Length: 255
Image 1 (cartoon, rainbow, N blue to C red):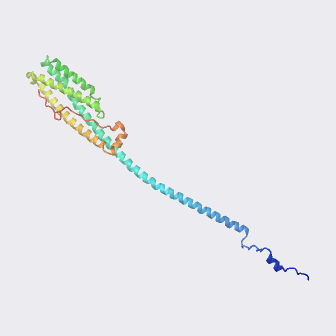
Image 2: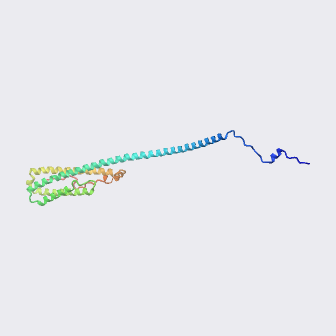
Image 3: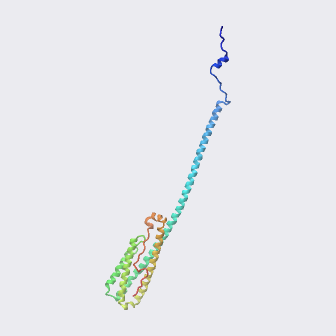
């Protein structure tokens, strides 16, 4: 008996299953366009995200820089104000020192007339006249070459002036030996002028010390001392005029 060939449906069951592709409903060109648009949108979103991060970083940086600029402006304003104050006080010290030099110069200018007047009546007091003349010469050497910024020069100035005062005191002792000299009009005029010079010296010296003290207090106060230190000798600490003991009051010149 002849075996019949298998039916088509049975052979299909025994072989591999074949599923035909389902149509997407879109043409290949349209699909590429859609994918291209998706990629472009993704790139645009990524670009927007980067730009947003950059903008935020710029905003943060700008805020930080504003904070820095604000503090720099405050510090700059304070620095300028401190500098101007030191300049003003320094000029006050320099001006007052000039007054000190002026009154001492006034006293020195009286010395030649004083010596010549005394010489006429006291011809045998040569050593005393020589001491006064030499003291005046030393005063002339330091006059105008002294700065309140230089303590050493101020000390030399003080020593020269003290020597001048000592020489004048000795000259006054000589005058006491000559009563007739004390009675002359020329001598009485010199007496008034010398007394006035000594009084002005005491006053101007005191004012200089006050001006120097005001400057030093401002200069050494924190944080202004940072500004002063940055300019070196421009705002150096001022030297005080240290007079001899007992010189806080003007000496009485008696002939």
